[in-house]
Length: 491
Image 1 (cartoon, one colour):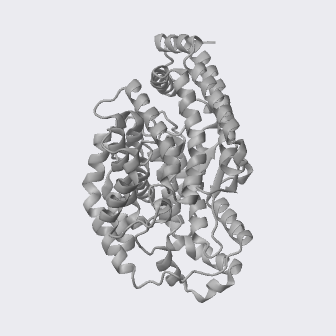
Image 2 (cartoon, one colour):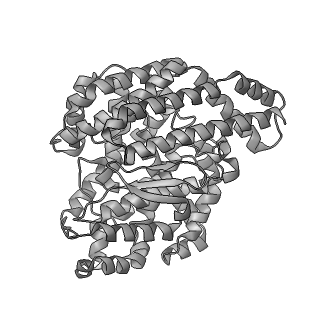
Image 3 (cartoon, rainbow, N blue to C red):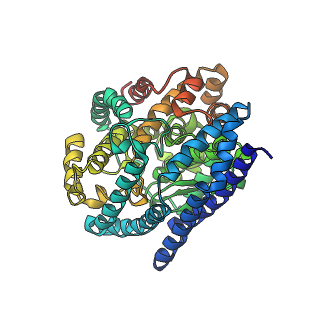
């Protein structure tokens, strides 16, 4: 065996441990008894330590240096070696004790966040956020950064990105986003916000969700849907992708669009090459690309007329009271713009404003300009400035998202990057006449095939911006997303 083969063997061993930890994480979010959280935290901390020890071990370094000294000519192997070196260098910056501390803090932080959110009391979560923020700063200092600590954390989620570049992209479209949101909300005031309210039995919602997810390409032989407080998708290995959603029996679209969103993530994971599992070439390239897939299927497909020409008759079969609502009125309702406190319940026109707020808060916390105790006040002031009305309580404000409790500082920018990338990839795919024609007839398989070929299959062999350029002809360009929003909300 070559040194590169040895390196791949070690990487697949690490993947076995990582996916085992992921199963425990999924279980914690879906069905773990509350009293079991401390022991689960210890389990996950131990596994995180084992994974870190393997990834920074002498055999790993020996195999890596051997592969670099005698690299394979295959470009996929070369990309894998590049990524192995990047992750090894970052891993060896962190002592095992710090990795285990971070894992424990995340497990305990998520439990505290859940209680704080339920009680709408930030003070319950604040000590945990202090700990998580301190750990994030320590990690950033050990990794190093070009301009600000946020750079080091953003690199965890968006390979090769720099905060200044991302902020420049956001700044270039912030004025347009705010203007589109304001006008879209004003135009939507004539659309009743209670038109779809009624009784939607849980079992019937689950039936529709599964039928739709399967129809767009999610493989239920290799996946499933469960119920949680904060929806997510997790990839636990080949043929094991878990979707989650939450339900409201007074309306069905929140759960359905949640499933479409998570199915977009899931189909990306299911589209990765099984033969490359455990290697960078078998892993998603970034969260900004991952999010493009969820937003594409949730919004560009799931809120389109062709989609509902196909699925509205089935929805009225399951929920007969919908028959009194015309398809046109239904489409206007699901594409209604309205300012909301809650990010995950916001519409396309206003969504990115939520991300701009979060990125600003995170950067200020990391730079030490904003103390944890002052986060609710800062959040509420920023929110009212952006949206024009006050936040009623912590649960609708700074406690609504799970990310900080997970130690996910630096994660939020990828959501808006996902929106920008989704519009750009969707436009590029539809330049092929056969894909546009199939889309107009509610046949979405050609679109999925295009995404598999151009986005899923490359894995992490390309940097995110190189993948975007190869797939669409240009790096991420906000113009496509702005044009989409104008077409949908300001025709």
